[in-house]
Length: 146
Image (cartoon, rainbow, N blue to C red; front, side, top):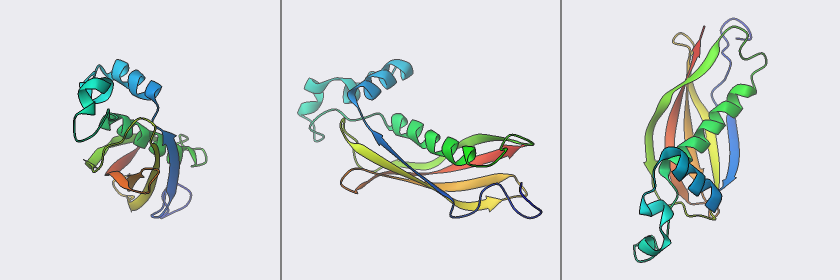
């Protein structure tokens, strides 16, 4: 906390990150998570579907969201001097369009509200692809533990 009445973050604070959804990222995520669904790893099986090919794991996008929350926390000077920021979770996540291997996604993480009494920040996350189409939305709750 910087001064009386102020919190670490403010409504409107924002992080924007870009990620390329690579073949190696999807394969590595399949291996780490154990999710080897044909949706993500089998070209042949997915070619005849309405998706026309493999799609990235939704949870991979959530992982990218986590990088946004880390980035916004790390911008706070002496962030861990008195409190530890931790994720309480992601709410209202919706996968609106498929994300394909080779897509370039932009994640916009924007602090929406602060509850200083409960030591929380709630942020909106919007993920768009290289065509500026919204592919995923969600919100994140960040807790500051004394």
